[in-house]
Image (cartoon, rainbow, N blue to C red; front, side, top):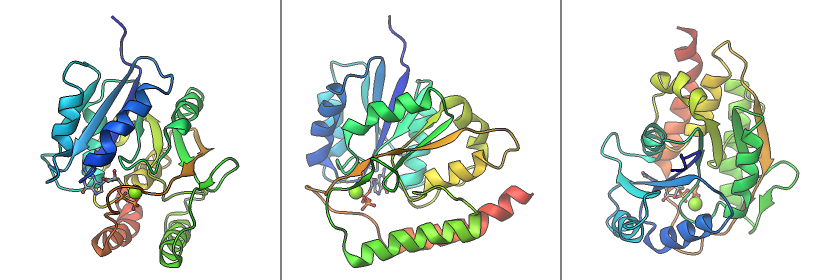
Length: 237
Ligand SMILES: Nc1nc2c(ncn2[C@@H]2O[C@H](COP(=O)(O)OP(=O)(O)O)[C@@H](O)[C@H]2O)c(=O)[nH]1
Ligand SMILES: [Mg+2]
């Protein structure tokens, strides 16, 4: 029996039209010994059921429900806790993260502990022009992480990232996930443990959303601001 090396965790809220096509693309991207865990927010559109139906004869594809604190970040933590792979990756379920970037991210993790799928390094970018308001939100958030957290990576707002399970296990008890930005919380905690943590950024293309809608809202922005305030105080204790 092949053991699982790669766990791909996909948080979803109403992504029924996207999720099975996305899973099929992952299955076809050339990875071996992988599992896909979709962590769904009990979506009214039946996303989780679609995954369970598709994966019923496969032992490496599962849909699970986030039955803890609601939200994107807690769902990712639940997925990482449930995952059995040595390498964990989180990607969106709406196909804005491109499967073609997945093998390079995992390859990069061979020599690192944490890999950020970055839109702002060589090889990264956007497939569509963003609205001015979205650009302002994204760039101001990145600037604030630099000022408040001294995080200097180029794309601290990315949701496409990979981490070694051993590294995740070291910080998971310190996580207090809220909102969208779990990648940043993990990165901050990992680089403040006092132990060395090898971090790199790997260029990704951020695609246009074809089906469904963005769930970014005011609450997500407020959760992010709260995190900027809390994280440095929490790690000083
Ligand atoms: N489990 C879970 N997934 C969520 C939640 N909110 C958003 N997502 C998923 O997180 C991913 C990114 O969300 P999206 O709305 O596309 O954010 P955007 O790309 O920044 O506009 C998508 O796969 C969403 O379905 C949530 O509350 N719970
Ligand atoms: Mg999206």
